[in-house]
Image 1 (spheres, rainbow, N blue to C red):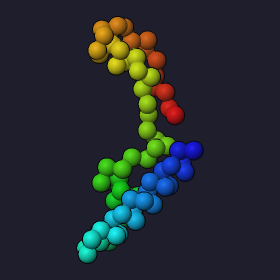
Image 2: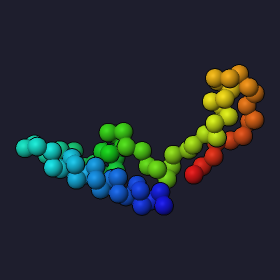
Image 3: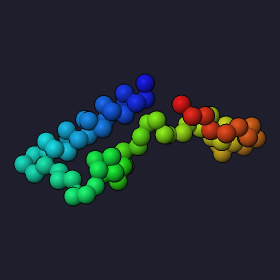
Image 4: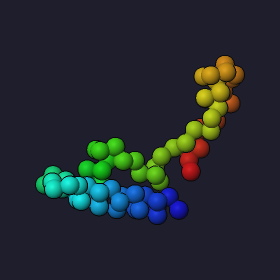
Length: 73
């Protein structure tokens, strides 16, 4: 599921960069599109870790954290 989302987002970003106004984005020679998109701040959704929210409760409410590791989606 996240692979399909990641592929769609990457292809839309590449299309957007290449269709910008009269001056399309030129990818630096010798670098991959994955590296360029990562440098521009695009995250790979298959490698993003999501916290369970326990640390947020601890930070804002002062309740003890359960100590569980982050959940990988």
